[in-house]
Length: 264
Image (cartoon, rainbow, N blue to C red):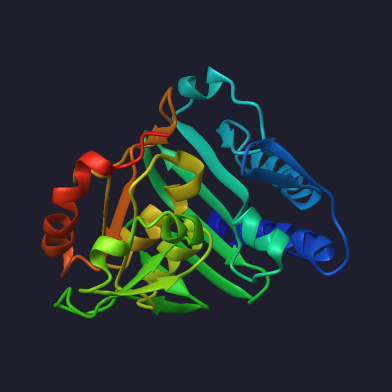
């Protein structure tokens, strides 16, 4: 697994360099659906990752934001779960808060994870049972025990919709792009928690879930249930990630607002 991780890191970094070649020059943008952009960089990174990752684990399935899904992956014990460019909106706006997110799932559970922000050269990686690392050094979730004053990272769109207003009198909310990046930052102790009270695709969160859990944190869906991956319908009702020490307080704070969570 260590050799596989090393190979995956090299491939992810290569995808990051491809993304930056567009970021630093020019790219085209189209809309897959309203408020859901895709760029040349997304597609180029997806092509590179699919070719290279399936070459090193040829018997794995494939689930990616930018590849048409087929249910053949359900017949595979192993599956790559990939977001070639998470945070496309930030990429388009020139905000350096986007990532390449790659996870390998074994029987529904992530066992290898790599998240890379090529604009800031931040690399996060993890193996099941071996902990998480940030910039080559073992990382741990924060040791904060009090939700009051905790650093909570939130997406721009969710803040604009007012989804974090009920909590801003208790916690310090900071805007940050890419849910994969936010999860990685929780795993490195750079934030105490993050959550999204709306559906998330598996490729958005799979690598981040392993990073957080291997760093001593906790990741659950909006109903405080564990999350599994490579399912027929690869969407989760939302995500809550924290350092584990404030988990019960986070759940208690969010519970009164469960009925207002987005369903699309």
